[in-house]
Amino acid sequence: MSTLTSNLHLMLNTFFRPTENKFKILIEQKAFPSDHYCVSSHLESRGIDPKIGLLTIGPRKGEHTLRTEDIIELINKDKEIAVVMLSGVQYYTGQFFEIEKITKAGHAADCIVGWDLAHAVGNVPLRLHDWNVDFACWCSYKYLNSGAGGIGGLFIHEKYKNDQSRPRFAGWWGNDKENRFEMQPEFRPSEGASGYQQSNPSIFTTISLLGSLELFDAAGIDNLRQKSIRLTGYLESLLKTELRNEFEKDRIRILTPSDPQQRGCQLSLEFPDCMMKVFEQLQSRGVIVDERKPTVIRVSPVPLYNSFTDVYNFVTQIKQVMKIVYK
Image (tube, rainbow, N blue to C red; front, side, top):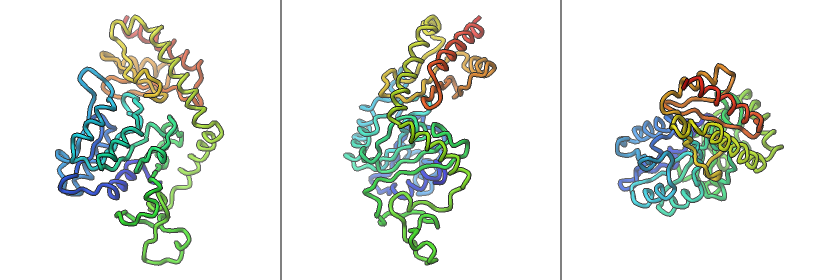
């Protein structure tokens, strides 16, 4: 339903119930910018100064990724946190957070725990109900292949399916379909996440997503995950072998964790000195990757349609590009 950021606003409206003692929202220091915009503006709408209400956590000095124990320590230490809202997979580094552990810690500290799964859905297996996640939102135009501007997704835990005690921004499409066309002025919500829908979804965005979801259903996310682990492992190994000299001279780094359980298919390659030159050279050769300023190129061998040959060809190309850039 709707789009990622608007769904996050809807969920914060429902689940963020600030009090005098608990009024902070925790996100990553380098969360995707729209998450910063969303949380800051939402806090302002509640009369809370983002400088006070927005709490961020970053990696330790000299490290690129967050440690689960540091996240949990902060949740336990800061009693003013009301909502923990991290990314399932961190967009810049590609780190796959330990969702179950962090959610459990958040609940133990009397926090609501929600997740932005923009870079996780379609990338890694997710067991949101089993992990007791309160809410989660995502877009569908990344790994779900719906195309730019595709419809967003929303999860609300089953324990809230008939909870009408929390406020919500209600709309036509969220009303129980059994009495929707009785045209009553009183809102009677559908169960669960569907009760948060507001308007008819676009036929074009739903149909474009359906074709992709049918492929995911046929392939199976667990099968895709196994191929993904092998593909990305091959990419990492080949890079370190073929570009050994560049790694030793610190011309290239891998920010993404080496542990396959702490990443999806993405590897974030950092080029401290000349990222845009490398990116432009790759583009000129028809290699499709993306850049994230200031220094990162994200490479994602997607198991649904990429092959080991694609990985080999990419490393061959980037090896040539590094010779040109550093000639």
